[in-house]
Length: 346
Image (cartoon, rainbow, N blue to C red):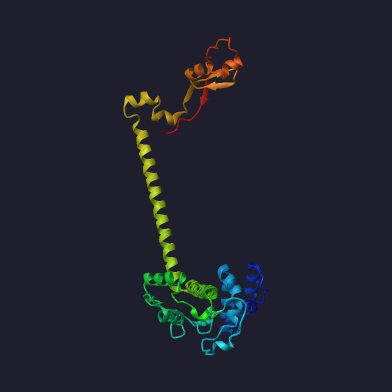
């Protein structure tokens, strides 16, 4: 397996625009239609698409950058070497006795979707190994979730990804203990050894769980069943939105029709016209004018809507302070102000 950056011919800090430019240039060059007779053209083009798909996804690219050495130096599926010849690298590294999942972080791990080397067979076998590893060390193993195939029901597919996207291992990971304390050691030394070993176990467990979870996310993104489900949900959502818009438009048309008939009929009784002061027929002819009396205080530079508000203001301390305590309250002015407004439809 080659490095994704090497496949695209870009630097590790290349942005999305540089990745897109490099991909388009190589796609025109490596496309099978332009390399008729070249048996390796299809594989090269598939490798190019896999590299571009990984690097343009922020989550997958971050995971690939953090575990690039593990993925590139990872064992092949047929590798049976022992832990002794495992090259040590910085940070927590899983032992070779663990389930070998590194080769599956590549779209070239499967060929098509059906058949023994297809998508469902290859990744179904990978997650089956994870569950078998859990069953060997767990006191009460959980019920298995089968990866299934193209004919699987969505509920079964959803249950599978719910389990592995948030995978929790039940293993102890005692194989990652770094120290061994004999019974002759003091209690303080044994406690320190136990704490240090527990720390290494937690680190190994976290690394293993992250690897399984990331593989589940990697597979889910490429699963045709998930893509079909997303399309179905999008269609259902669009259908519901269209139905809601149609219902809203229908109700609006019904309201407009009711208004039109109401206007044609005129006021329903004399009390309605007396209360409103306007008939529906008047609304079609002209805008009504409303007369409002404004009460103002020159000393305080304030206006009031009613005579009662104005009288209460004249008795306030703030008004007397500005107008003078000996000055009688000014009489309310009788200056009408005419405001023009459209009464509209009520």
